[in-house]
Image (cartoon, rainbow, N blue to C red; front, top):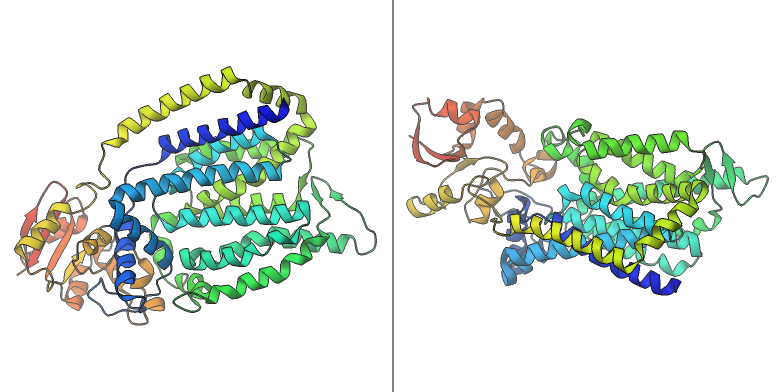
Length: 495
């Protein structure tokens, strides 16, 4: 009977995950996808030459996520944006199932806690559910955690051989975030070292200290060779060594302080995350349940980094919550195990499953209906008509165009050379070895000191948003003539 209930609940989890995917996956694409497709098609045609072909500069380019570019280009070529949208939904669905599976492995099959995590993870992860290389990176990180935890639980070394393989995949799918996997190793390493230190004179299976305790992780020493091999395989990328040096180089630029995804998290604008942090603090303070050292370090570390960068909230959602789930399961086990079992017994009743799924799918379908007729990208976000005008009325292959950072990827997608696009690293001197174009863009666009910059790059045309402060100034400059305007964008020509 128990086995039958588990199978039923497993099906319940799968259908719930499907409903969450339908409800939460946005149809609107993110601007990076435009250059990803163009890069992927370029690789199909010419291979990887470590040069940029889409700006009107001759720059070096590192292709930090070339494998992802190839994947989305293939999908676009065969299935258009519909295929990419379906791909995102599938990856999101697999991530949710992996979250449930890994959580069960970590919390001794407390299916109720694992089920509740699906809702929290999916809602916190929602801003990252889009066609970007990060989405695949999150999946690879989850698998790495599964391997480490499975090894610590079973002591079977067969799991570890996959760690270098995942590291190699990560380096080529999303080389910019590749070093972060070794940060995920740190809580495990610290716990292992503490175990060795504490057991130097007296051997114990568990060592307690106030709210923290250390498990017997003496066998973690077998992980180190695979860790070093994982560190070595990062060299096997088109631009040898970029996986090791990318973070160092990007910290030498101004992009971190300018781009929205790198800015600190404002908790008052993310109330779900704020309430969750407060709940976690109260749980830690008011309960007597001890927490594993690696869990404490992982949760604390990811929470800390998420406060300094918005994008790390997503990492906490898919990684940190796994460890929160285990701690919460320990609390339930110690404080109210019976209550949890009673709730689980109700969840496995067919009538409850059917009613809950009906409700969830109705809500999901209503949500889907709102978005199904939406475009993947709109004239409000991208200069669709302005680009059509340029290609029809101008010798667009010879113009030197000043454009915004956010619209650059769409413009190059339409085969017009750009001044800048959302590949922020390409336009900085530590990466291209020539010039700090990104800084010049900030000077002209944000600081409005455009005259010197426009003269430096000899721009013949300007394509910007109608509500930009720069347009308000240029509209009064007699050296620039309005060629085209619509509700959102303007195209000007230097006279």
